[in-house]
Length: 387
Image (cartoon, rainbow, N blue to C red; front, side):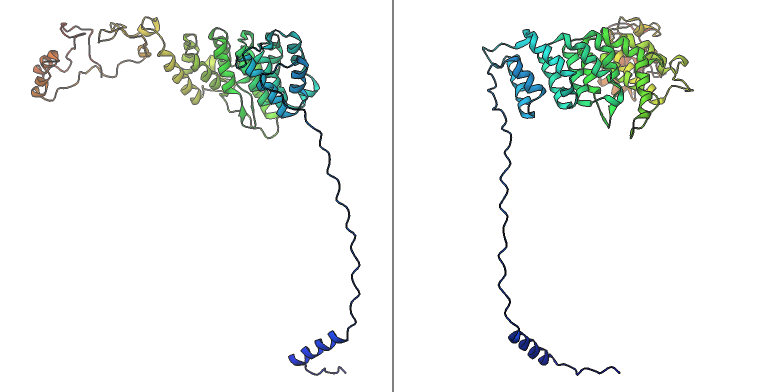
């Protein structure tokens, strides 16, 4: 049988807690807690002091700073080399004639130290560009032509800029290859295009035209096919090879690209990719835009400007010679009807400046009136106004 405890009021609880507090023995004093001594601060490795910007530096120090030094000292050495070679330090000669410095940087470019650091390799390439080391061009081409899995965007951009600055004609193939490298939404398309322009159209345009053809550039075709093997990388869309080559050709506006671009625009079977029934619409649109841009640079005496224009001369109806032909030879006139004159009164107001128009408006029954080639010249059959 469970015995029920008496109910305790709040005042009973207060009395009980006071009695327990007075009868409890005092707590022993707390033992002192031993405090561990603070660890001594770690001694940092002192970095070498920075040198003055225009102070001459030995080749060994420059090589060590660019290949094995701290990042800030590497940037400092590169900035000093920039200032010296750009003429900002009077009295200090740029070490372009120092064969030991250039050879040491070329060896460090492919060494194990630089291979493990993308930024370090980029600074070495920039230093070789400042020194105008033409012997480094084969190594720069090899860096651009690496497989997709070994590409580094910063190194690719620096190598493309270096080949353009060194005017490496043999590097055009590598630069066209670099147009199609895209790693994690980062690419060097602008750098490669700029370098191709610096090299010149004679070296760049033939290789770009070869890239337009389905089997004209095996390196680029193999590169685009390797995207599917890279993790987290989607394969390129069909026609990317031709589209990027067309965009690069637009910069040159070279007449040598007109024929292959017209073949793409006309859906020539020889320009279709394997498995394609037609040339892609985006490729044809890019080809048309590049053709229009190229036509603006052609002279009016070019045969492609006067072909198909009949009796219309290259100088146009105004009698003034025009430098660009604007590709009007391939576009027939949409209408040969002359603009109507709403009333003879309106035409009479323009009589002092256009006497021929008032004569045309007087004969309202003739809708195919002719305009003279120039004021004061009798109308001819070849001077037809087109809308």
